[in-house]
Image 1: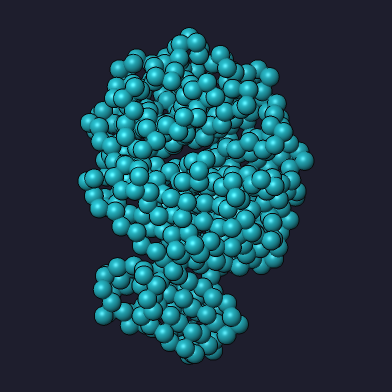
Image 2: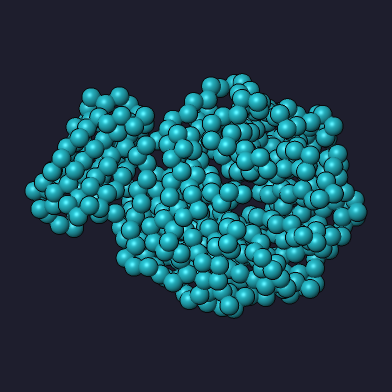
Length: 494
């Protein structure tokens, strides 16, 4: 193992904002009127466990778990959220649940593939890799974007390897985290420009068919037309290309526009392949099992939706298709299609629902459907103007058949803190009023209380905390006003 991994349990991270009102479509029984937000974080992906608990992967290294109703599972990693940080790591990009409840996380270190397995309680699984961690290095720089499980328990990953130009890289691991030498070349196959078909690929999703064949969803620049296309590759169980799929193992289509971004993939029960992403508009394409565009879907195998970005794709009961992303005016956007690719007009407004959560850059990164059909959407936005703007993680839950146009705004935080990072002093500002009494507490990352100031009075709309004696690092501040509203922030002491 190249780097040491340490776990930090965060006690005071949640900055859960409040809603001005309850909006149709969102489930008011979940979290805080249907939502959670966490400052200085993003949510990358989300999965629902068989026991209905919800596990969320955040950037860069956060993982947290909630109960079905949105309350925090305090027993997960002993305090609901982990920060898993190998030194020089980039981030975790993907999460996958094993049938036994153990959790796989995939991403990259500074230059190598990173795969981690957690036990059901959120702690590292020492039976996997090196004390729960598997770092795999090949020539060049590589990272994992997606992982999937085979029926036999083997793990396949897909991502990018730079050799020196980007290549699609698929790696297979045995259940204990060791490389599977029966797959490709000692566990790895990759496809780059030397294949003579495409350049500049980005592979974002991988799935396994019941017969053991492996399907990859990607964006590639096709040499024949110079355009970026939605692309699907199908591999045999041994890693070689399946030439029964479009005669080459690869199928692609131009969705219009010179640039295109294929971000997500789903395999239907009948083996057909759905790819979702965007160019000048959100687009979903469907290939049949032979690698041809499925003309029974949308228009000629393609469904074009609203302008915006499509980042996530999931299937609902009855074969309905959910696409999550961002609208042209940067609101959270969910679109629903019928199995034939036409908009489902029973959902939202003409098949789409838009939710304005934060000031800007609202986008969905992950979708999941609960056992009762309710829809979970996780992602990110920005709430503060420059220079204090930073990403805020957002989790929303919608009713299964949300109706109406969702245009809602989460209230801005009542308090502000600055500067962040801080050196000597940290100022808590209350710009909307004066004469407010608050309690202020500061914690380190272990949950130890360092500062406790009760009944602080905002004489000039601000209070200052001295932090000059704090060691450099990450800290958390909790502020509670006279009405009982509590807000928490993360800050860095330099």
